[in-house]
Length: 146
Image 1 (tube, helix red, strand yellow):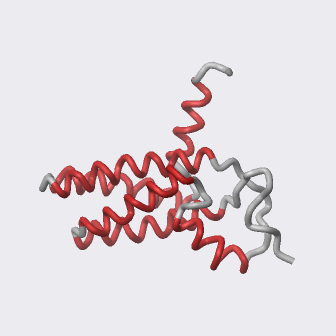
Image 2 (cartoon, one colour; image 1 turned 180 degrees about the horizontal axis):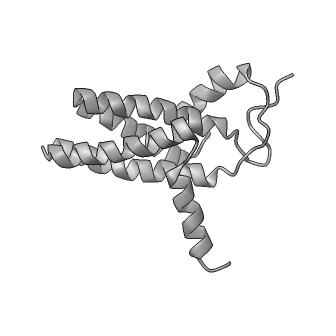
């Protein structure tokens, strides 16, 4: 019997962010290949939903919970949603700047920023290494205890 996709403690299935990274990689690769500013802007909105609304409102997370998660065994462990949410905010920053650069016809800057966002998403998708999550942990290790 599959477990509930929403943990009462607010923890998340760690496979969801990786699934989102796969879709993000595909969208950003397509945006780079085609030079599509609307596609880049759409990914920016996806990042905004995840960064602002959290995993419950992240479009790729919703897709994962509706279509993929029911077909899988329960995860071995759950994870804190704060690092992946921070990673969404980092992705939002890069793609927002890339979108603005593309609109301003700063094509090389838009390309570079999109490529950096794609590299980070691909690292997560292919190797389960989330750079934004690592940055979150690094920043919280250095901040004074509360």
